[in-house]
Amino acid sequence: MTIDIFVQYPLDFESLWNDGTKIDLPGTSLRIASIDHLILMKRRAGRPQDLLDVEKLEILRRYASDGEDGST
Image (cartoon, rainbow, N blue to C red; front, side, top):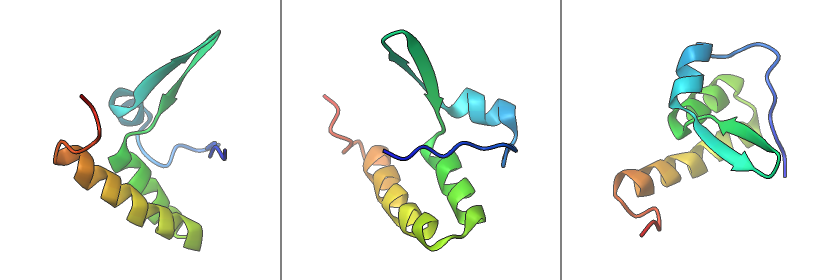
């Protein structure tokens, strides 16, 4: 697993925080940026892998907006 850590906020921190998803793990919790914010950040980075990730994230966003995210 790869985790991107930012030393500067590429977007407004409050917006990232409020739109993110909190994940509780044993002994800790973390917050994950929303799909829309991930797409924005990866487009701004512009590296080849980031642009490939954007394509995958856009597919996930379409499934989520269509209600086809696998949730019951």
